[in-house]
Length: 228
Image (cartoon, rainbow, N blue to C red):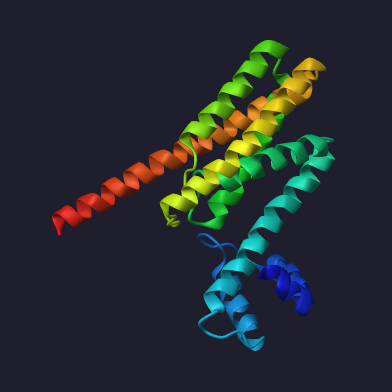
């Protein structure tokens, strides 16, 4: 949906650029940006019924782009752009079908993403694990991810069939990654093995956090219903 908007209305990109520069952050995503997006969409004759969907799409594009652009420029400055791109591809595939913890607001998500990336890239410079333990940890992490996935956010409501399809697709991705990990071990590519291992461990931790979040959320909802 956002791609259709950009194709038909290229000035949306200019709007994003100028708005992002002029924004003063409040809690979560900036309130003035949300209001401006709604105003822009109404000027583009988007119906009130469709407005929330277009708004969500545009906000998601802006949030994702801001994080990725920052990470790309920052890692390029540190000569770690290739590591970041590999990390992002692995993480994106796991995240898409495996799920995990989601912040409700953009600002804490942005800060956590930057700090996590910095920690991962710094750790990558100092880790000295040999090939065998690194391969085993990566493989066990993939197994753990498959067993615990999918982990939807509290805002998502998937049917049993939709969850089954996600797990099925995730299984194919995991098999491909496992083959790639074995190949890296065979050619003794330690650096990429370390990157795979750290990324998969990071993804596993996010999924565990998501499970805990859902558990306590459901516990609170159940308690509120009991009290009523």
